[in-house]
Length: 337
Image (tube, rainbow, N blue to C red):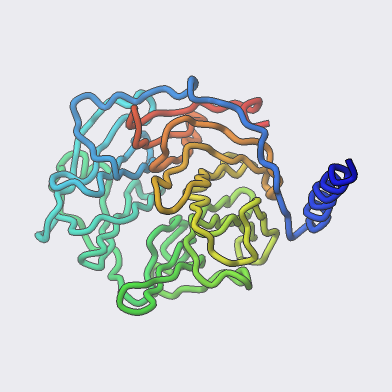
C-alpha cells in the first residue's frame, strides 16, 4: 500500500515541478489533450480532371488559389477560383528554357502590384509573374526579380516590400548539410539580418515560420524539437513554448511541428508527434493564443501535406496525402476556444 502512495506522490510531484518551471517567457505544456475531432467538417475540394501530384503547396492571391505541383513534369502551377474552387488554368512549364522553371520553390505575393514571385532553386533566380499575364498566357516569359546565391538564400518568405521580407533562410553547412535561420531579408540588396533571439540550446534548426503584421508577432515552430518560439518583429523574445517531447535541446527521433499560420490573434500549427522513421505527416492542428498559451487540438483526420489560412473566407485550406487530396475547414470562434 505504501508503494502506491509513493508512486502517487512522485507522479503529483512531477506534474507540480513541470508546471512550476513555467514563466512568462518559458512555457512548459505537458498536457495538450483538449481535442476536438473535425474530420467530418472537412469539405473536399474537387479538382475536376486536373492531375496534381501528392507533393503540393498552397498559396492565395487576389481571387485565386494557386497550387504548386512540385514534382510535376509538365505544368507546375494550377489556378482555381478562391471562393468556389473552380479550376481555371495551369501554367509555367518545367524545364531549362526561357519561361520554364527548373526546381520550383516558394511563391510570395505582392498584393499592391497584383503579381507574385516564384523561386527557381535550379537557376538560382526569383521570377516576377503579373497575375493577369500568366492567366492569359500560361507560357509567359517572366522578368528576373532577384538573383540568388547558394551561400545564404530564402526558402520561404512573407513579402512586405522590396526592402523587407520575413524569411526562413537556408545556410549550407558542407557538401550536403544545411541549417535554417529566421530573419529579415532585403530583396533589393540581398542583405540578411537574423532575428535577435535564437534558442541557446538548439544547434540545428528545421523550422516553419509565420508573421502577423497586425499583432507585430513572428513565430517559428521546430520540426526537430517540441518547441515554438514567439518573438516581436525585430526578433526579441516574447516566449518559448515547450511540449512534452522537449528534450533540453537534444534531438529525438520524433517529428514535431510542420506548418504554422495566424488566424487573427490565434496561432495554428500542424503537429505530427510521429516517429521520424515512418510517415511523419501531421494529422492534427494545435491552437494557441497570441501569447503561446495552448487552447485546443483539432483532430483533422487526414495526413496534412500543407495548409494555409484564407482570411477572406475564414477557412483553412489543406493539401492532403490521404483519401482526399484537397479540402477546407470553415472556422468560427467556438471552434477555436
